Structures are given as structure tokens and as C-alpha cells.
Image 1 (cartoon, rainbow, N blue to C red):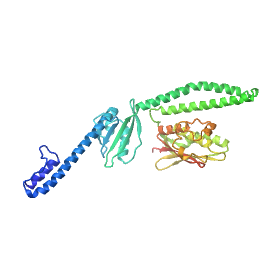
Image 2 (image 1 turned 30 degrees about the vertical axis):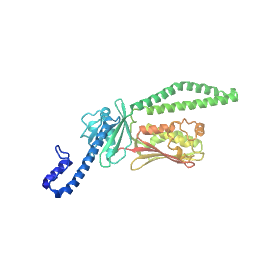
Image 3 (image 1 turned 180 degrees about the vertical axis):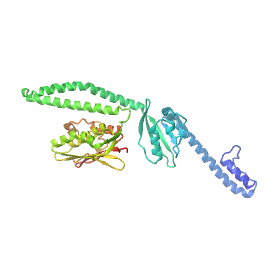
Image 4 (image 1 turned 135 degrees about the horizontal axis):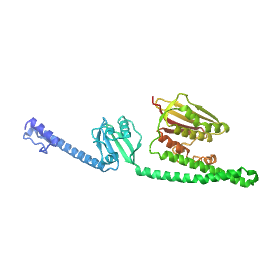
Length: 388
């Protein structure tokens, strides 16, 4: 056997060509040691190939059977694989493989998330709606190039959540009428308090105070329901911030001045952000009201709006009692109270910060907090920059 024939056999065996011998055989005894070494290498190659094929087969079976949709793209962003679950959920218009995701699937969120992953970013999960199906899209980039997008059907979870919030909203709506009646009667009776015994006056005042607290609670629940039940995000446009902030802080500023606290608003007249005005007004009003309530007499509250290279930030700062770090991860939960006795004494419903969080999510903004006990708090609303 000459060298050319030996090379041909090696290539045929390595590439598993049909009819290729399993081992090299030569008649020249001087090539025996070399051939034995080559046979060992080829055996190892065949073993690795079998393992690779087995793993690839198992991986593909897992992807095919997965209840999570999977879309794979190469480093150029072209689709290389779509599992059956993704095909069923996303309903491609054309055969996806070899095309950009947006060409096959009419879902801008999928293309945007994949593009971010290919660019080395870690995109946040994106929730969107396709017909009657709610999905969450996440994407991860691969070190060697390419990315994987996973698609989860969360319709059942969202339907359960909507059923719960609808129930709360319906109950709140129905209870507003009797609460309003109780408030009306108590206010009417208290208007003629000179003719009522003192002990009865105190009871009526307590009835009136708690009825108003129930009214505020129902209003907050209904407002939170309206935000949560939206199937789409709030519309965003370019808006000048100063008029929005001036309207948002009126109540808190008056309350601060009447209670011996200073209040300041700093915002450039031309500063713009891409935002939803109603959401910004509600978030700032809630944060400033909390700042006044949790700042001692003689304290200071300041609202400032500044622009950075990447965003517009509205800060609500106070030098009040502050929040212990152990509570800061939970203050945006419904009914969570850092100081339950003080919160109830101030008449809070425990829903203000939960509403702020959901409005931020619905308007594609973000809330952050920095605080220390006895040193005050700084809440920031991170808004998008205006489009030029």
C-alpha cells in the first residue's frame, strides 16, 4: 500500500464514508507501529463522533418535546432552528430557517430581544400578546456567536391574575356605595356636634375617619386594577416635564408648607422625556405624598428632574425617617408596611408604592430607591429620553 492509498483510507474512515474499512491495514511491516497509532486515533474519533451524535439526538428530542418555545439564530441573526412549540405559539408566516425572526414571525419584541442578545446585552424578559395568547420572550447570547430565544405561554397565569384583580375591583366598586352612605351620614351628624354627647362625637369621628380610609383603599384598588388589567403598555410620547411635575406635586407641596416642612421643585423649562403624563403624575404624586408623611416637622423634600446621556431621571428626596435596607426589596409589594402603626396613623392604604411599580412597568420606566434609617430616602423614576 502506498502513501496515497493510506491517506485515502484514513479520510474515508474519519468521515465515515460508506464502505470505508473500520481499521487501517497495510502490508508493509515497517508501517506497523504508525498504522497501530493511527487506528487508535481513529477509534477515538469514532467514539467521540458517536457520543456527539447521541448528545445531539438527545438534545434535539428534548427541544422537540419541550413545552417552552425555542428559536435559535446564528451570529448573523438568521434563524437556524424553531421547535414545534414555538411554531405553534408564534405561527410563522413563512419557513423561518435561514431568515431573520421578524421576516417569519410578526413579533417585533422577538426580533428586538434577539438583536440585543446578539449584541452582548442581557435583555429583560418581554411580555407581549399574540391574539388571545400571552407570551414572555427571553433571549441569551452564546459565547461562540448566535443566540437562543425562549418563548413561554403565560396565558393561564395571566388569566388567573386577571380573574383575581377583576374580583377585587368588582368588590371594591360595589362597596364604595355603602361606604359613601356611611360617610354622608357621619358627616351630617358631626355637622351638628354641639347637640351630640362628647363620647358619641368621638365614635362618629372614628366612623368617619375609617370610612374615608376605606374609600381611599377602594380607590387605590380600582386604580391598581386599571393598570394591571391593561393588555398593552401605556402609550409614550415626548412631553415637557415641568408642567407635569408642577401638577403632580401641588397636593404634597401644600401639605408640606402647612405642616412646617420645606418643599422644592427643580426642573428645566425645556427638559423633555418620552413618557406617559398620567403615569408620571400619579407616580410623583404618590412618592411626594409619602415623602411629606415620613419627614419630621422642619424637614425638607425636593423633587428634581435631570437628563443623563442615557435617560431622564426624576428624583424625590427627603431627609425623613428613612427605610432600613432589609425592607427596601419589599416596599413595592401590596399592603407591605415598614412601620404598620405609623402608616395606619397617617391613613395610608399600603397600595401607593405597588401602584407606582405597576405604572412604571406599564410605561416602560423604572423605579429605584436609596435610603438609610434616620437619613432620609431618594426615590428615582428612570424615564426614556425624548426622541429627536
